[in-house]
Length: 241
Image (cartoon, rainbow, N blue to C red; front, side, top):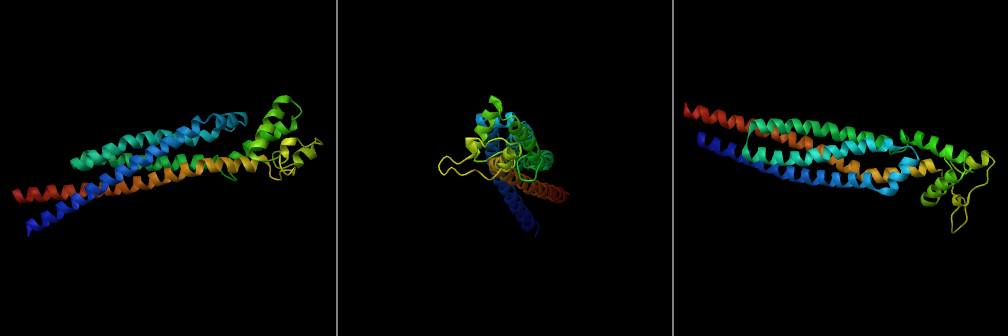
């Protein structure tokens, strides 16, 4: 009877151990993907230039956090694999702690990235102030250059719409009109830019949240493995007595 119980426990430990190993491989792949996407977003030259001109570099706060956590999670995944295969309880407890940290950090990084990249977020007031300032000084060469660059590439007009120019009794620039139809762009650049930034960050946040969910699963499975290993050790000690 005791042998049957031991064999059953060994099977449970083996099942948890190798499932945890596979989940850590998936976590490493997600962390690598997250690192690649966040570094690409941070290093993209044109995107960086726009954020700098519009004084909206707060967008990068969440990106920096996710870059850091992706590097940590890539390293931690190897710790998870080793601690699971070795059935080392101390290493497993350390791994559980890193999974809790990883979950909190990915949620925080994702929340901050969304806070500066979505509709009705902190990004829009920053864009509103910057673009309105350029519109009010659109006669100057630099402001005209910035507005033309944004309006032509994004397909927008003014901060909130073409009436930004009309209220200031300024003529609509040619970049406010569609080059093919000649019709004026109705949407303002604040909304269009926000949708543009949102599209850039959606996939990053999705991968980060998937990694955070995997942190929880790996943490719970590691705790279950610790309990199973302890139970096995207790049974071995009881058998020796």
